[in-house]
Length: 87
Picture 1: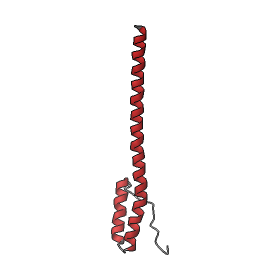
Picture 2: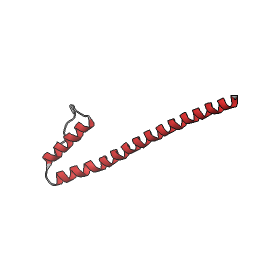
Picture 3: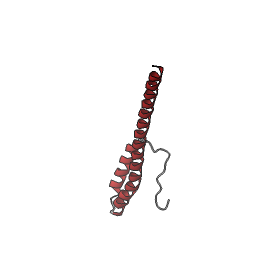
Picture 4: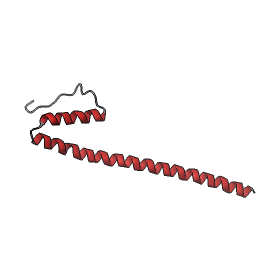
């Protein structure tokens, strides 16, 4: 009877460990997905901006940048100066 109780306790501990491992695996999958999306975005946004600039649509490019800044939670760029050609 004691062995049966010990077996049940071990089984319960293994189940808890398995649940924890499954939770950690899921968290890793979510994190990796977010990282993949980040790298995709970092490759995508400069290409879009370059196309806008090459098309002479600097107003839309500025709007696009402002929407990215807002989406990233950067609400104030005080202290940063815009570098212009010849400056």
